[in-house]
Each structure stands twice: as C-alpha cells, then as structure tokens.
Length: 137
Ligand SMILES: [Zn+2]
Ligand SMILES: [Zn+2]
Ligand SMILES: [Zn+2]
Image (cartoon, rainbow, N blue to C red):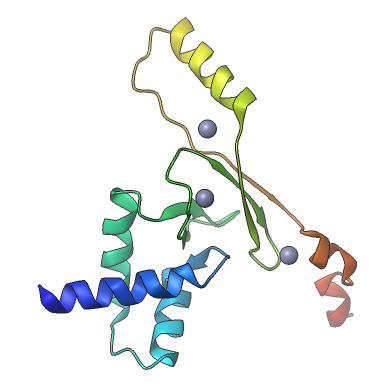
C-alpha cells in the first residue's frame, strides 16, 4: 500500500508542474527521466483511478482514442481549449453549453445527464510559427 501511495504522489507531483495534457506514455517517460522506478502499467492504473475520482481531467486526443491526462486546479465541471500542436491548455467555462444540455435533458425527461466537450485549435505561439509541415517540403 505504501508503495502505491508513493507512486501516486510522484505522478501528482509531476502533473502539477505540467500545464499540458499528457498521455500515460509521456508521464511514464518524464517520471523515468526524473529517476522514478515505475512501470507504465502502474502509471496507467494510477491515472485511471485518479480520473475516476476526478483528481485529474481526461480528454481524448483529437482523431484518436489515446487518453490524455492533466491535473486541473478547478474541481468544478469545466471544459478545455487545447492546442493540437503543443498541447497548451486553457480551462474554460461554457455557460451556454450547460444551459443547452440542461434544456435537452429536460425536454426528453432524462436525469443524470453528463457531457464532455473539448475545443481543439492552435494557440497564438503556435500560430506565429510556420506550419510544421513546411519542414517536410
Ligand atoms: Zn481542466
Ligand atoms: Zn500551441
Ligand atoms: Zn459543461
């Protein structure tokens, strides 16, 4: 049990220093680089457990099934604006979306309705840079 706790706090420590969403693989590699003796399966298991109790936010990588994790200071329900190029993330509120979701649920007599919605784009830093693909021409 003690070992589990230590590993989890190492993951949390790392996530607190990162502003971007990271995959389990990224987190595993960063922890190894810092000298932690931890396996990918353990990282993955801990992230899943933390996502379940909402200690970390989870999004899916655009156009793939890969899960990305981020420690969010905001415990309340919120959404994310994610740069698809560098992973820079902004926590955002979506009042209009919340109202729309509540209205739809009410109209159809659904209770316990949840949603997840993330916006993907290019941050200003990445927009200034030449598009990545130019390097391949
Ligand atoms: Zn967040
Ligand atoms: Zn960016
Ligand atoms: Zn929402």
